[in-house]
Every structure is written in structure tokens, then in C-alpha cells.
Image 1 (tube, rainbow, N blue to C red):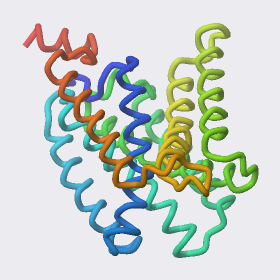
Image 2 (cartoon, rainbow, N blue to C red):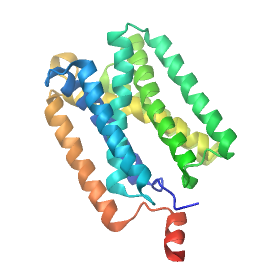
Image 3 (cartoon, rainbow, N blue to C red):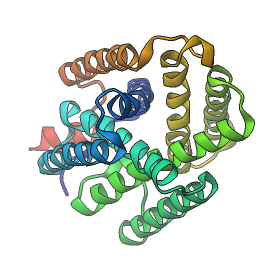
Image 4 (tube, rainbow, N blue to C red):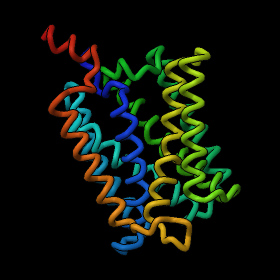
Length: 255
């Protein structure tokens, strides 16, 4: 087995994850509406870019912030587009797509556990585990998109209130883990799913017009702002290696 291929779960991890999620929402809208590519064209372009980045990611021998986080940003866009294509192009009800993505994610977890006897992200050090990991990440984004859209359409709380609601749900998961003993692996993946609608709500709140309940920054400004912050944090982590797992450090010292 090699070095762990994913970062340590620190505050930096969650900040960049939410920012990538926000970019996934705003960038998908931007490319679809402003670039005139349509959902199919945007999906093909982003899918191709994601495939290239994942090939590079799989070929690395250890976690590299400059490769890992672009893969997360692109997979957030692709996951959003998969859900949007089902809803907007194929007319699949959100209840159906949410259920399908939940089942797909459960199947990935089941196959992953049966093959590896663990779902821990602290041991993504084989091709099989990494393949399961990225499939799980993809379906968490698709599930989070569909479930978030379903909640927002059914309850219609508005972007800001929705963001607070999902943030409180994540806080509840954290409380259940640290105070009530909820399993760390399941705590992580539940929070991972919930960060998708949280980031989407924040992105919509900042980008949508004031008349629609947003701040009115627009998709271009919002995407550029968050991409700048992501880039700054990724460069910082690449230099300081603050999010390299202890397993990876030990493997590097032993090499």
C-alpha cells in the first residue's frame, strides 16, 4: 500500500469543500446561461476536464493539494450538472432523483466496505479504495444537489435561511459525533453530503438578483471570488502541508 491520497480533515478541508460546492453551483449556472453551451455542452466539457484531472490524481503517489482540490471542484460541477440534467432536460422529479442518488451512494458504500472492510478516508491508498472514494464523492454532490433543490422547492425558505438550516444540520452532526459518539466515518459522510446544499444556498444567495432574495453579485463575480479564495488556500496548503495525514508523513519518512 502507498501513501494516503486524500487530505487530513481539518478546518481547511471543510472551508475549501464548501467553497468548491459554491463554485459548483455558480459555475454550472454561469457556463449554462452565459456561455451558451447548454446543459449538454457544459456537461460534456466538464466531464472531459474531470476525466483528465482524475487521471492525473490516480497517477500521483500521494496527496497533492494542487491536484486533489481541482478534482473536487470539477466533480462538484459535474455532480450538479448530472442532477440538473435529470431534472431540467429529462423531467425526472426531484423526489425520484434524490432517491436514486441516495441508493447509488449506498451501493458505492456497500461495495467499498465489502471489498475493503472500511469506509475510512484515512486509508485511501489503493486504486480500488480511491475509485470507491471518488464515486462516493460524485454521488454526494449529485445527492446534495437534488435533495437541496427538493427542500428549497418544497419549503421555499429563501437562500439565506436555507444556508442557516443546513449549517445547523451540519453542526448537529458534529455535536452527535463529539458528544454522543456517532461513528466518525458516518459523521464525515453525512456532513459531506450536507455541505453541498449549504454551499449551493450560499452561492445562490450571493449571485442571485436582490429581487429574487439574493445579494446580486452575479455568477461571474461570485465564481471569481470563491475561486480566488480556493486558489489561495490550496497554494497555502501545498506550501505548508498542513493537511497532510500522519500516515502520509510516516510513509514519506520511511521512504
